[in-house]
Image 1 (cartoon, rainbow, N blue to C red):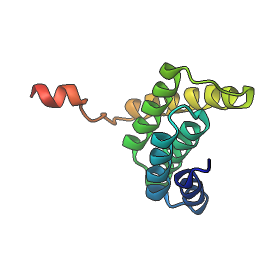
Image 2: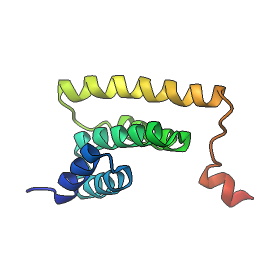
Image 3: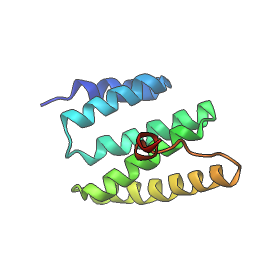
Length: 115
């Protein structure tokens, strides 16, 4: 079964259309929730968007996908596992650097609902 959302997300990622890439890859992940490769592409899309737009909030989204992929313990090929390890450390370090540079992450949903 082909995933048209994945095809669209990857096409948009290649073209640098970050918003479309992220949306397509999120839909693709919803359609195939056990496909780790889609989540790896989504991490890449968020990272590229963050770099292009200089927006650490997008790095936080990449970090959230990293943690979700880690916590879901999805089956991965050796190549995907290696890609994930590198991405996890890279995104973690970028978020830490952004915080050290003065960026403050937005409040969590729990914090917003308590207020």
